[in-house]
Amino acid sequence: MVSRTSTETTVGQVVVGALMLGCAAAGPFPSPIPLLFVIGAVGTANAAFDLMRTFGSALLGGVAASSIGLAAVPFAACSDDRFAEVFTCTGDAPTWHMTGAVLVAGLSGASLVLARIAGAGSVERRLDRIQQDLNALRRGR
Image 1 (tube, one colour):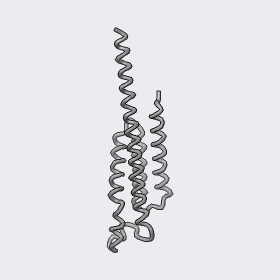
Image 2 (tube, helix red, strand yellow):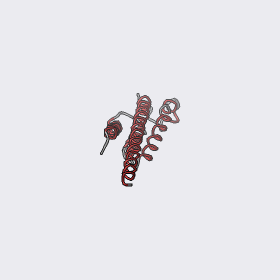
Image 3 (tube, one colour):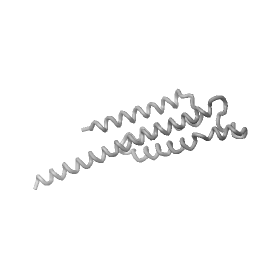
Image 4 (cartoon, rainbow, N blue to C red):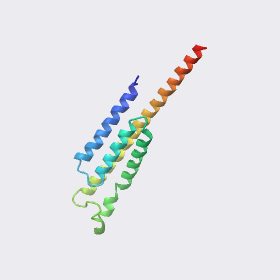
């Protein structure tokens, strides 16, 4: 039997993953932000399953940390002409870069919270199953 919390967290993970893929596909974000969105979506998909929750959470944590680290880099890089080839420095690109990095970090954090809730629910279900098995053994004596 699937609990309500498990269903809600799965729906939440699907929504977060869809938002990440939508931002990567249709967002005005310069490189490498779309790649971070795609990697975050892969981590979200992995974190939705019990078997891959640890890998997905680690991937999401890495994406969140790297996007926070990359958020302000274009502002520093675009202030010097030597680094203009690394990041797009025309127009509002540095602002979109920072906006995208913050969105990636926020969505990755939300997915991490949902994975944690799903993991706690999974542990509770396992403990309930063990308790039921123990009660069945006691009744058999």
